[in-house]
Image 1: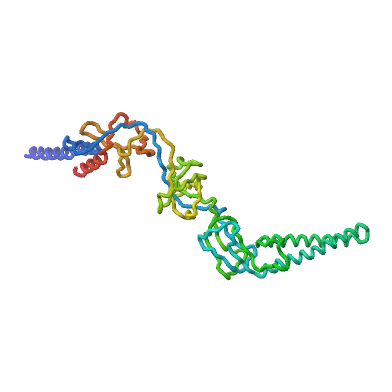
Image 2: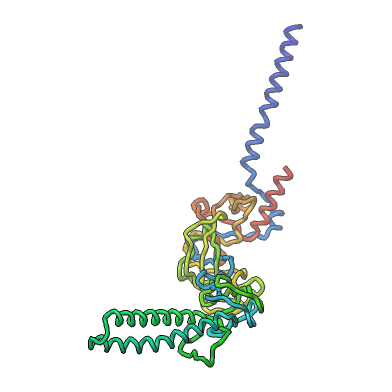
Length: 378
C-alpha cells in the first residue's frame, strides 16, 4: 500500500515537471517569430504589394532651418546729444523710416547760445592777440622790446588758438558750423541728423523733455547688415558651409521667398544641441524687421549611397524597419539604420543585410498593421 502511494506521488511530480517545462519552447518560438508574417493566398490578394531592391542612388536633400531676423551690434545705433538740452520737436515713431542727413530731433538750450557767444568772443580776441603777436615779434627783432614780452604775446596767442579750436569742435558736436556763425545768426536750437538710411527701433523722448548727454533719444537700425540668425542641429552641422545659398520665408507668407547667403557658422553647441548660423540677405526688404521669425531651406549637395524609396522605410516606436519578402506569402520585418533623405529616397547605412533581397515598397505600412494585429490577437 505504501509502495503504491509512493509511486503515485512520483508520477504526479513528474507530470508537474513536464507540465512546467512544455511552455518554454513555445515562448522561444513566439519571440523568434514576432517579426514574421505569413499570409494566405486569399489574404495576399487584398494587399497591393510591390517590391524593390536596394541600390545606390544620388540623394540631393533639402535642409530645413528656423530662426529670426537679427541685427549685429554695430548696426544698432543709440542716438544721444553731446551737450543735452530740451526736446523742441521730433516726428519720429517706432518703425519710422528716415534718410541719411534728415533731422531726427531739434533740441533747445541756453548753453547753445553761450557756446556760440564764447566762440565769437574768442575769435575776436584772437584777432587782437595775433596782431599783438606780430607787433611784438617785429619789436623783438629790432631789440625794441624784451624777450619776456614777446614770449607772453606768443603764449596769449596760443591759448586763444587752442580755446577757439576747442570751441569749434564742441560746435561741430552739436551740428553747428563754426564758419557760419556771426553776431546776427546765433541760434538757441540745434538739429540732430540721421547718420544713415534706416528705421527707428525705439523712441525714448517726447516734446519738452530735458535730456542729459548720457540719455538715449532713439535706437536706430541700419538695415544694410540685417541678417538671419538660424539654428542648425548638431547632426546637420557639417552639411552647412560658408557661402552656401539659402531660401528664406516667413510663416505668414511662405510664397514670398528671400535669397540669402551663409556668412558665419558658430563654433559653440547650445544646450538644445544646436549651432547658430548667420546668413546675409542678398536684397534687403523693408518689411523684414528684427525679431521676425523666419524659416529657411538649404539645398545639400548630392550624395551617392545605398538607398531605398521613402515608402519602404517604416518608423515604429522610434525605430526604423523594412519588410523583406522571403517567399510568395512570407514576410519579415527587420530593423535598419537610416541616414540622409532627399528626392524621394532614404539612405540605408547598414545595407549588407538587404542586398539581393526583395524589399516591400507599396503596401509596407499595411503589412506593419497586419503584423501588429497578429501580435495582439496572439
